[in-house]
Image (cartoon, rainbow, N blue to C red; front, side, top):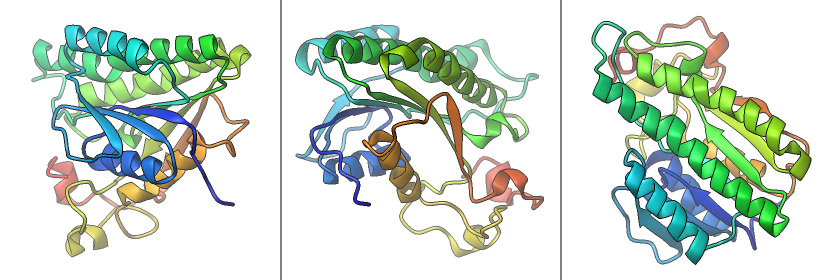
Length: 249
């Protein structure tokens, strides 16, 4: 089975770093036209990077209008933009709460609305993929905003799938576990101590591989589902290494 995304237009948020950047480059290699949003724009002639602050309502709405006018086509939306947020209910600020809701619930909702409208208008049976996290199911301490929005994305996926299934649009949640995104080489100690059944941290490319399948024409009958890619972390009884519990990684 050889996956091709040739002829597909894919919008990836948070596509300028980590999982998003690796996925953007991989999708481009597979033949997709990639539009990737972020706040720090890398140089790449094959990918259309657009600077957008998704926590800004004005920036987001301006981007949506630009996309409709200048691109006007979409086969796959990946709502990937995310930041960690280490606050408990006892010290979370309203500013932090609002920022997380804007970035990881409001932006995905509005972009999914845009994508669905374009897909329906063009008669495209496309894909909307939301990137959650296993913290929605297995929270770390002092992670209230992050856990809440990731859980919300899972519920959003189900609701979108119910509304859009009649148009042939598939909506899926991908739920990564411990994926190392701080560089190309995982520190040996961190890798060895990873609390996964496979005994190592995951790599962004492994998530990108899954996303490529989900965005491809091979994926024809998955919708409203959560797909874990966590190396068995969710069912492992191993403790997380200090680098993860402290928020360093």
